[in-house]
Length: 421
Image (cartoon, rainbow, N blue to C red):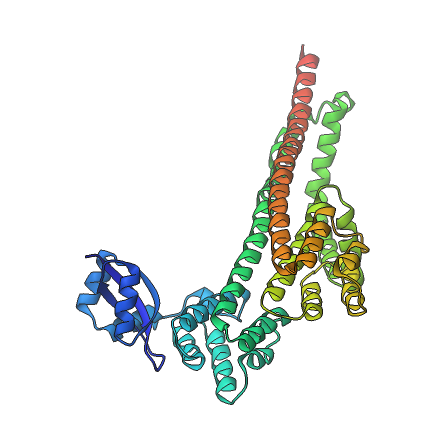
């Protein structure tokens, strides 16, 4: 019979670990429940896990698992979105196992390695023990929990299906994280190529080209024009390169500041939507955020107007958010949802048709989630195609730049040989 490593909490919220022999993972979880424990994690045990269980008590193993040693770098700093996602996932497991909310929060406090996360869980526990609903406790921390998260929790409290709501909330957060990571990952390779191009240019102009200057100094006006241009560029780079670097850094800093100002952000977000290929990708990415949030909220019983307002807030592009803000008031006045969104001019025909079908069948929430899945696939495919197009262009640019430098140097060397002959 195989061994399984387990981590579980008792009725008071105390976490312990160990190894249990069982026919399967469900059988191992049943054994733990029979002992009065609530399973948090059950995995196949390695040889080291079995040895550790034989040589240490469950309490010491639990302390080792909870990390009583020196915290790592990732355990420092403020609470981030990954911490919130992990907390939500852990709460889902514990509530699904039958652990009460206050005891689940106690477990989170004991399990947390990060002081900031431990403090947040402690404040949530104190608020809940003080008589507040969990959604109200979360609302006291708007920096970490947005309206979407709070309304999802509130719908779970009203329906009595908190664990189910948390499960859908974790799925929502995972999908959004996967979408963001795909966007970030797609931009890494072009960025590496750009850095390589700049580094190659600096190296050639600083070390390679100056080493040929003594050969060309006596040629004067007899040098070919490309070689003259190359030498003049290298001289200017050596003489004023530091000033160019400072100027580029200053321009980059002030541009960054301006783009993060209200007027600069609005200008940039409007311009990026007009770019070929990239503009469509950005628009579809923003609509994915809206559709997934809208469908998830409606699926958990959040009223239509509230769901529309919260889903609109998830759209970060202000140019696209502005027309979406008109949907809620139009629906409130009695306009059909499909009519309100079709007037905006930002929804594709496929999106409008899916919303129409959802409204006519009373399943607008599932249709919104289906729309989000379709848009998500289109964004991922578009990113791959854009990357396929951009990478060769960057490589060609790098090759042309290096080729110009090498050809200019060879032309100068050939001119010297012709004069010597």
